[in-house]
Image (tube, rainbow, N blue to C red; front, side, top):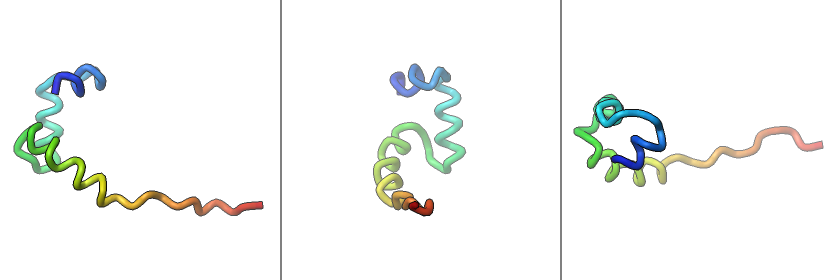
Length: 51
């Protein structure tokens, strides 16, 4: 957690509140859940018209 706290210029309490806002019990559950949730996100496709 210390690396995330330092890289985001926030405090441990803020990180814990964020995790709980996501419905998780804490940072440990966040670390476990994050890879699975990220892999479920489909990459955006480029829909801009090409000339």
